[in-house]
Amino acid sequence: MQAWGADLGRRARDRPAAAGIAALLSAVIVVGLGAQSFAAGGPPPAPPAQGLLPTTIPLPPIQLPGLPAVQLPPVTLPALPPLTGSTSGASPTPAGLSAYQGLGAWVDLYHYGAAADDPPASVVRSMAARGVRNLYIETARWNSAGALDHPTELGAFIDAAHGSGIKVVGWYMPGFADIPTDVQRSLAVLTFTSPGGQHFDGFAADIEDRSATRTQDQFNAGIAAYASAVRQAVGPGVTLGAIVPDAKNNERAPAYWAGFPWPQIGDNFDVVQPMAYWSVTKRARTCLSAQMDVTSYMNEVIDRTDSLMGRSRPIAPMGGVAYCDTQQEVADYVRTLQARGAIGGGLYDFYALEGNPHAATLWSELTPLNG
Image 1 (spheres, rainbow, N blue to C red):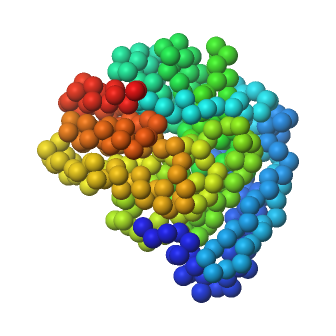
Image 2 (cartoon, rainbow, N blue to C red):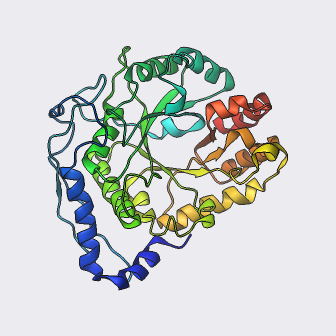
Image 3 (cartoon, helix red, strand yellow):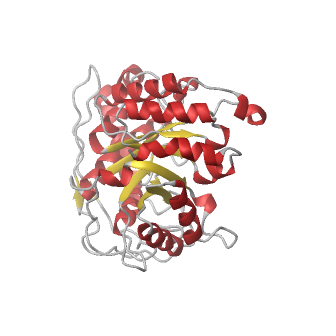
């Protein structure tokens, strides 16, 4: 993938340069501020608890190659819908890197919250037996009905995980067309309180979904605005994770990801978690016999991510997808992460890994990530 600035600079020839960028970003923010949540059927709007969001969020200047810097006006936040679930009115609790260190297990919205799903306590026991240190669980998406999709189950996951010595990071998928709602739902993770009085240990934004935005420019500008807004909202003391596209895998569709604002990711997030799914190109019927050069793949992912961001951040790349990974690949993945100083890792996702016929062997290969 080409550097984001070069691509935007090329396309800027087709419209007034600095003014066009400023208008685009301002439009993304203003549209978001005036929009209602995409979800329907929720409760009537009401203001959030005092102290949950700042009144205004300043945005940094936008600098593109060959163009003057554009200073955007601060964003003034309107009243937002109330949070769903048990949340406190306090500011987000600071979280450190420990929530992202070691072996992680990933759970998305497809695997909990329904009557047929395994109880959270049972899932956590299985994770603990596998040596998991960190549970990453999806809390909501931009088109969810509320700030947290399944608060009861989330509380049960947190209480069970903490009882087993496992930290919990909540991850949310923004849409980048309604920035205030995206910020609110991000803060809902850090202000959530479980029945046992426990909290999430960290937060990560899943930065990949383009379906809420109308154009590629709106998507990229929305990411930049969201990244700055959520950082300003939580302050410098809260560790934020960014789940980002795989910079190497994106070579297969460079136009689709053109202009992705990598520098804003590096500026506003403390931990970067690339979706380094080396096995996505394997054929489904033969995936377990198709061997990949994971060492080279992971080295390129780390190098390109740092280069595109323009800086190095603590990194915890996700491997996978787990149902197609082999023992050799996972062993090479772990060795490469250790050699590159990654703070953690794990395969996507927990259920895919458990369904792999070599699950026990793969978990054994992953446990050295715990140091």
